[in-house]
Amino acid sequence: MNPFENAINLLERAAKKANINNFEVLKHPKRIINVRVPLRRDDGKVVFFEGYRVQYNDARGPTKGGIRFHPKVDLNEVKALAFWMTIKNAVVDLPYGGAKGGVAINPKELSERELEQVSRNFIKEIHPFVGPNKDIPAPDVYTNDQIMAWMLDEFEKINAGSYPGMITGKPLDIGGSKGRAYSTALGGVFVLEEALKEFNVGKRVAIQGFGNAGANMAKFLHDKGFKIIAVSDSKGGIYNKNGLDIEKVIEIKQKTGSVVNYSDAKKITNEEVLELETDILIPAALENQITKENADKIKAKIIAELANGPVSFEADEILSKKGTIIIPDVLFNAGGVTVSYFEWVQNLYGYYWSEDEVNQRLKEKMTTAFNELLKIHDKYNCNLRDAAYILAMQRVLEAEKKRGYI
Image (cartoon, rainbow, N blue to C red; front, top):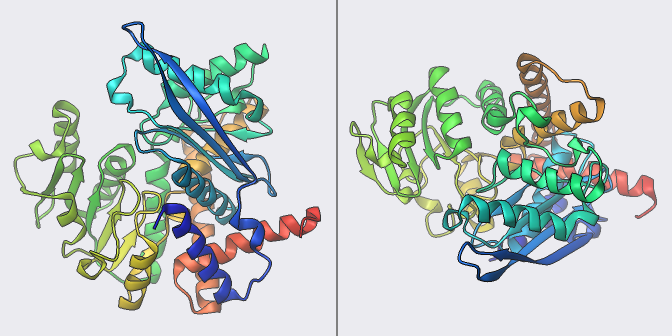
């Protein structure tokens, strides 16, 4: 099943739970932009890559969502991610619709000059459709603040002005927000702490994926007294039932490029990380890591989705029947877009907040959203994912209704 079909199945299941009938508008993206992105390689050869920007729904405000550079980017993936951004922004009650973008390229194979050219050329292709009051991109898989800076600069050259609010996740020097670099993880921490007040489980944690979000999540939880028993990256995983020294793991990752070079742990695979005996499992890598093939092997009491779409539709059904609590991606990883929203607000006002102010506002947003989900979870006797979709549908469809579209 492709990720977009997975997303629509989840939408339909939640609509059925809450008897919502007028959700057809949410089954189709409003606009799909498919572009050819040129690159003159360092050897002089010109090559082209597929680029996408999907603006899914703008009933609640300008669309918002990241841009990823990854060789497996395709239209179905980008549509699904744009749909999830629509749901996510509504769940956290941000005044945004949802969008997503990507270029089918492996940035690890590019020189810095080539990476800059791809970044600028992609904005050249989509610039009429983005901007602070239209569609606001941000970093995603294999993109970062430097890439956002190049994209902003290119947009401002084309439009002959200063538009810091056209993109978020920027360096602090050109309008970024304090706290943005670790906000996805910190937002998840706030949600998890709130969830543990409701669901009484232990504090053993396994994390699949040790990029920016996964590593920050491990550090935050370790500092708060959680026992991180396993982590992994693209090269494999490490496990120690007594807990890992996360500061050391991060240092090894930075020095050698992988957590597998940490010595005081057993080497395991990414698949084995998912299947460990643990209280909390945090998938922080890519989509569809837990499927119908391995769902029965999952032993965690709580799955907290730091990645987008790590649990397939079929696996979600299996896990729900087992009683596994899943904190859905559309809430758990929404800290990033929430602080992106704060960045956008600061850009529009030209007034910037302290790091403590940003983090306190983030905590308020995330804990409020979780408790709103709990109310729907209780009202409809449904799981938290269905609760998130019901809440988002109610908000988006109400906006569509007020605009006269339904």
